[in-house]
Length: 69
Image (cartoon, rainbow, N blue to C red; front, side):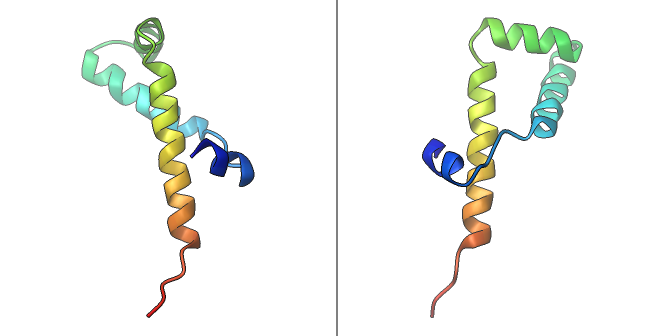
């Protein structure tokens, strides 16, 4: 996935990351900054970033797919 992202110049959508952090913060009953610090301390922030980037790559691939009969 990283190779496709690099070849196609797909970079992490910061808005999606901010939205995900806000959602997690709400679920935890914390501020976005507190949730980000907590996730970063547990090495989860990079996993969330990877997940978002993977979603973006899949969206790109689906948008480029040609259906054959």
